[in-house]
Amino acid sequence: MSDLEYNEEKVLALASKGDRDAFGQLYEQYVERIFNYVYYRTGNPHDAEDLTARVFQRAMNHIKNYTDRGVPFSAWLYRIAHNLVANWHRDRSRKQEIPIDDLPILPAKGDHPERNLVRTQEQEALLRMIRKLPPERQNLLILKFVENMSNAEIGRIMGRSEGAVKSLYHRTLLALRDQLEGQNLNLEGE
Amino acid sequence: MTKRKTNPTHEENLDAIEAHLAGTLKPVTPSNDIVQRLRDRIQFPSRDEITLRLSDWRRLFFVFSGVMSGMLLLITIARAFYYLVGRRSAT
Image (cartoon, rainbow over all chains, first blue to last red; front, side, top):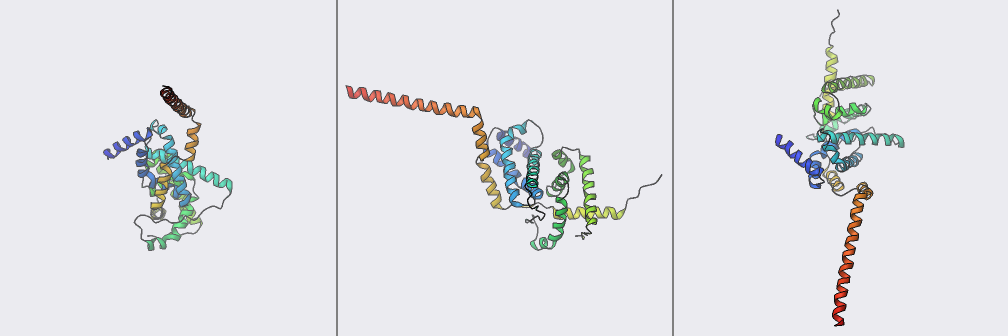
């Protein structure tokens, strides 16, 4: 693990000097994670692709600023992604476009297609609810479940303490439960 | 003093929601096409970056002075060549 961290430090040092190959390695390391995050926040693979490209372009243009701040590189990337997604939502609301509530289901890792089909309706209902939550709660759920991050790691990305993340998570679950009860939706057990 | 009781159904509800969140929010795999297209977009400078580079006066200054120096060098070589050829043909 320490070897990997050391490598990342080296790669970051090279990338911050303008080495494109080094930045390419960072891209390979994080592209799926950033794409996942943006995909769940936008609900659309096309916009997710465009925004993911912009995240990495912005990161490449400002990577020198990163080295001065001392936060993990992943946290820095997620913050860029968060800001771009926030701008995207703001622009969309200004343009009064048709809101996308239906998140197309891309194949999840290790899922059987028939199992996906059975769960699509439940998933869509739950995803619609998640996308109506405030942005920071959406971030929390994506980082926790999609990225499998601990509360401490999420805290570093969101700029909150571990306890604050835990508390926000509990309140988010309660909010979802209330919404489910309000809509008389009953999620059957697995 | 009243003792607060934890409601088992309340906890069960939250556990069920957590289980469904885990089943719904799964990592997705972007297609190879998407990853390749993104890689292509990132390897080459974007239009924004080119605009940024052009607005960078220091970079512009170096480019301009490089071009001028190159032109001056070419003119000097051409003049020297013309002078040498002219002298030879005169003799």
